[in-house]
Amino acid sequence: MLMIRFQRIGRTNDPAFRIAVLEKERAAKTGNIVELLGTYNPRSKALTLDEESTKEWIAKGAQPTDSIKNLLINKGVLSGKKVNVLPKKTPQVKEAPAEAAAPAEAAAAPAAEAPTEAEVAAEAEPAPEVTPAEEAPAAEAPATEEPPAA
Image 1 (spheres, one colour):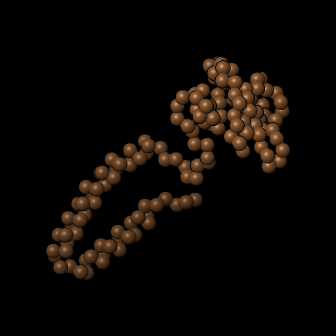
Image 2 (cartoon, one colour):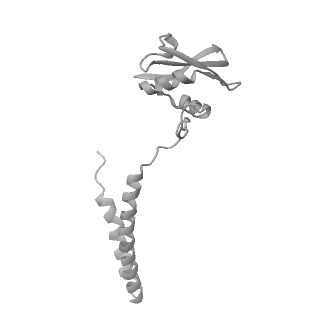
């Protein structure tokens, strides 16, 4: 698969990049590029790009990297939304589990209300000795439900 990506050139602490089309498996520094499309200097934000060749390569199936895609959107070669190229700090939570959790919470809410009504009935009857005895088995029950870790 062909990729449109940066090839770093320039000195240490003075980066400059070529925008090149090359095979995805090839290292950018090897020089085995298919075509050179332009250059980019991140310090001066100077971008020189052959827009026609870039559009042709994208039409042929070359995939731009996220950073290149953002530059092409700024330049007006591509249309669409920019991609966040920064690393993610936390893993993304899929929407499907969140939607599945919402009905589970809705089902848990009526179940939570039922014990509340039972507690109200228990409070109406004065039985302080029975309440601590009921709480102790309830506290032990979750510990026995957990399977052993080994």
